[in-house]
Amino acid sequence: MEFMNEHCKRSLDMDYVFNMLSPKTPYGIQKKREMKPYVKGEELSVEKDFEETQNFIVQRENYPKQWESLSRILNEVKEIRESLRRASEGQVLDEVELFEIKNFLVNIKDLLAVEETMDCFSKDILLYRCLELEELLDPEKQNMRTFYIYDAYSKNLSSIRQYKRELQRAFDSERKRITSLVEEALDVKLKLSGEVSILCKDEDKLVKARGCAYLTEGASTMLQVIFKLNQGEAQRKLQGDIENVKHEENSEEYRIKAWLSLKISEKVRIMYELTDKLGTLDFFMARAEFAIYIGGIRPILHSDDKIVIKNGRHIKLEKNLSIRDIKFSPISFEASRGVTIITGANMGGKTVNLKLAGMLTAMAQYGLFVPAEKFTLSLFDYIYFSIGDMQSIDSGLSTFGSEISGMIEILKYSDSKGLVLIDELARGTNPEEGYALSRAIVKYLKNTDAITLFTTHFDGITSEEGIKHLRVKGLKMLDFDKLNSELIGNANGIEAVLKYMDYTLEEVDNNYEVPKDAINIARLMGLDERILHSAEKIMYEGKGDNNGKAKS
Image (cartoon, rainbow, N blue to C red; front, side, top):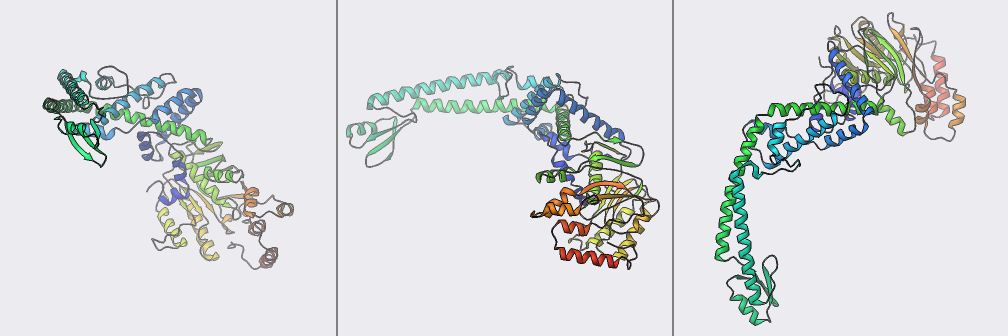
């Protein structure tokens, strides 16, 4: 099975995570696109990524100026792989492509010069120069980024260009001679375009202009006539010679470009290796920047089937809360093979705990640092997330139908090592059947190789033997009378809930009832107190009538 389906990726906000990774070059961006999660059995590979990222973080801290230089150079790097492919297929590269390949080599040289002033990079990242191509594309050793077909490539080309320059000088000289003759004969000054305007009232000058073999009459108005200088026989012959020599020059330049393309094709393997190394350098710089930005730490791999989160932070929620000047409460808990039940009030953070566990695990298995004080895990073969927003119009399934369809799929892989996240299963059906299904699934999953985190509102499920029960503290410690006095005149009750909700988890006895904070939350949000008093009375009167197992 796949590591995560698209629904799971969206639910765990992995797109948000990946969008924060910002490599600068086409090669680094491809490395990002090709990211794959490491699964059970690939511990050494993911540890290598962790080690490399840690090394880059140290480099950034120890060499800030060099790091800035690397970033600046990487911003200048362009895509050349299409040109390399064309060269390898025997096609002739144009001057723009040759210019971009030359600039790529200059960037490699500059990057390497910076690398050599820093601590040792791994062999997968340490660049090297392709001196043969550098010299090939800079035959006159000008050490400049510009490129053209240099005279140094061919004596024949040099001779052709020299002859063209001589013809051009002769052409310009002849034009200058003719221009002087016309200006002297008519006592006028020709424009650089070779045009001259003669007033209609100046009849003598107009007659001379019309009789001049070097002028051609053009547009006219009631006030003036425009004449344009034309070529004499000598100029026409020189112009023809220039066109012929330009054709020879183009042919020789094409021959040289074909030769250069062939030489580049012989170094294609090296060039592709350099694009790969540069992409790896770029991507690990992006990983390090990401880790620093989120305050990330290196995950710890453990052979035991468990995850341990100490002060973990959900970076998307943390960002959204910070915009509202609300601080995210870090989350800590531990879960092992089997089932861990998480209970708590609505808006109390149960789903956040599931998403945090899934997000940190997915990030670690993609080789990324995670936002926590400490995070320990063993690699999983898959992550599965069942959450109550799974309704699919395309498939025609309701939320409940989608949940059950997902459970059928995941139970096929119960012998594999996975992280299963189930958020309030069967909330969309009647309480008695929802309770029965939830408890039956918990009984089944507790004996599999998966680590299952299961949130619920149903009482009784937590009394199942062999499971762990964690409770979100929620509003447990809040003095509502005091808070209500503080909230008088404040319009936004949701802000109050977010501010005072305690997302901390505490382990409790499995017979501990699921908390009932819904009425208190409704009170914080400003629901009419008459309705709240009525609800409290109904709840108190109904306590003796419920079987205690299927309340929600």
